[in-house]
Length: 184
Image (cartoon, rainbow, N blue to C red; front, side, top):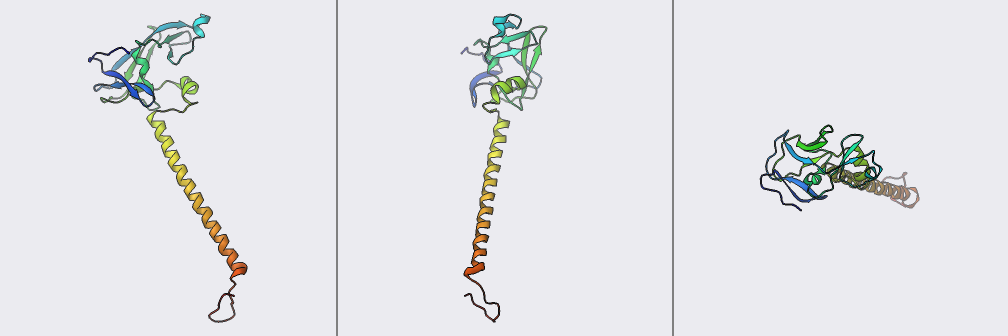
């Protein structure tokens, strides 16, 4: 992996989803962080249109950037449903930049929304691992545990009522006619 100079506001490091791009210093909102680059693919050429990898960035209906080259550090910016950056696509110039949409603090992972097509093709089948989606799943699991506990308590209560009902319907009948009645 190529070393990045200290003047770069980012570095590649281990993330919860593999490798990620992290801020090394504060990045102000609106700042252009890095360019996403690679070989240009023309979808009108059959061989280039059939190329499949996770680092394809579609500029428009005809041109796509193949960002799988190792020098393309921008490819390490991961997806997030609530990102802190966005892609600035310039189809005329055939360029894509990742820029901050909010101030990013040192140590924060730089993330942007990959879009619906990529999400449906690659992320949805395995489950999105961004912090927002992980938190939603964590809350859903906790709610499921609580619901399961409540259902179990209701079932035990019904079973207890049923047992008490059987006890009154034949096993321990009270004699209602006398004062200080006893069970027979």
